[in-house]
Length: 70
Image 1: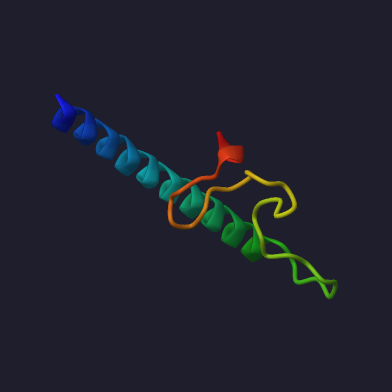
Image 2: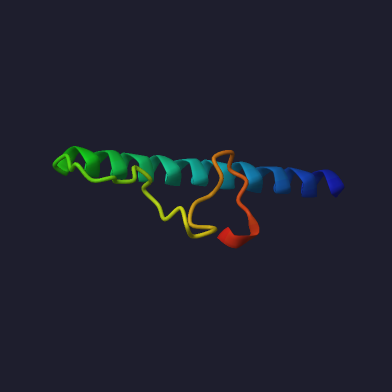
């Protein structure tokens, strides 16, 4: 019984990690496509495809999201 519960928890973590990686890759590809389409500006632009000022707007790179991302 305990082993089954641990296996379920482990699988949920693995699935969540894969989803976060796919989301980050999608954001990176969209930002890259937008950068390729947009003309080069001389102003200071951010390469960050998400709002870095908002907590929980993007999961951590290692797949462990904080409490603000749920």
